[in-house]
Image (cartoon, rainbow over all chains, first blue to last red; front, side, top):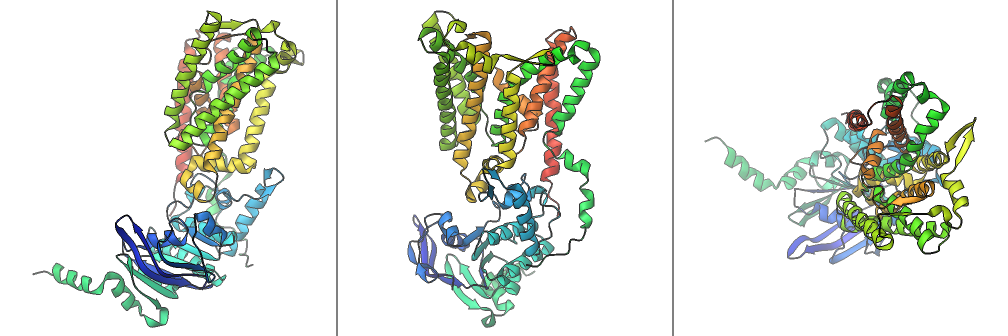
Length: 251
Length: 346
């Protein structure tokens, strides 16, 4: 396991946002975190990525306990987070976005030629088919934008990639594109934490599934221990769904 | 590393050279420049003569130095309404210290620079710390400086101007460097034009070819996202406010050395002219987009119209009409460009 939590928890004032959650991700594996809105998914990833600090349980990276004080700390340990909304700057070109904050230098200047070339190569290596690295990111589709952000994280030495609902705002085809890049990152030996509320996106690509409900865990399952139907049922809260079906039935 | 075969992408066909040029922020300014020049040059022989060119390049230069700095700040997502009146403050400090307190011109200029940079730093610090709109913060510093300029000048001189800089020690040297003329082909050109070209070149290089340039676009485009990838957003913005202040000091010193006296109300109202030149040059009011050279072109359009109207013997009142029309046209053109750039293709 590169990254592991044991009985981790977080309270905001009187609200128990997260209780007793244990999960882990290994190199070359995808751990999916599933849960409905308010299940505690975003609190969990904010702890993993260094935005929040946990106040119960332990958080281990490479088997050693850590406590990050900022996202920069997490990044320095190779834990990169790709957020759904604030990943890119739309009016800037792909290569400028790719190197933003970590621009290669030549003397005093920004090595523009190198930035263009490396961005193009890294995107190709991830199998991302970008028309032109000079185009503004705003002209890319949502899936392409997520993919560029993933390629950027991989290039800057991420060992663990945390993806916050990368497919939720996308159409079926675009979601497929992003899932393919998740698989590609996994094949390159990265550990991926994939947050989603869609079991149909999670099951094909996941190796491990952590289910969250109302801030607590419904268990972590390896892929061989759970079927897609069971996953969907757990996710939806099987009993609740049955009740709803009953309620909505025509009289 | 697997490399995809470099096959031609069928989608690239749509991105022709014309559209690529269209997306450059300064395109509108270049078109406007050519149109305005053609119009005045065809109407007035004086306008297209070397002496005429030297004449309209001069206001373009002093405005252009400010417009370029303001353009960088606007690309970084902020405004500076105190920039105009700060040129007056810098000039007043220079003349007052050199004529009333026995400073030589160089040390008086140095004090002016320190004060200007301090004002820029304060603007930047207040904006980045409080997250208040820079429009309001710098409107406050604008009004405060306006009051100080008048109040202090009146208290010291009893009038609303300070003069007599010519007699101060070191005047000749400073005036030659900042306010002199150089002859090119028998025509005297103001040396301010060279400063303007230098400022534009440096600003363009910083913006397009350095790390801080990348950060300027980023903090103006999406500050939160920029911060998330480790861009020092606050430092970038404070540096931009200080750059504007530096430009105000440079222009204030140039004008003070040129006229050897400074009116206490100088520079008031100029702040909007700088913003107009930057917008004509392709800057978006919302930040994250624009160019330094575009702002320099915007300043040239301004200079040509300012002097061209006089050369044609028209009433100078028409100038503001012209300025307003240019601003409106440029903003419309910029909006089209931005729509194109932000268009999301699924």
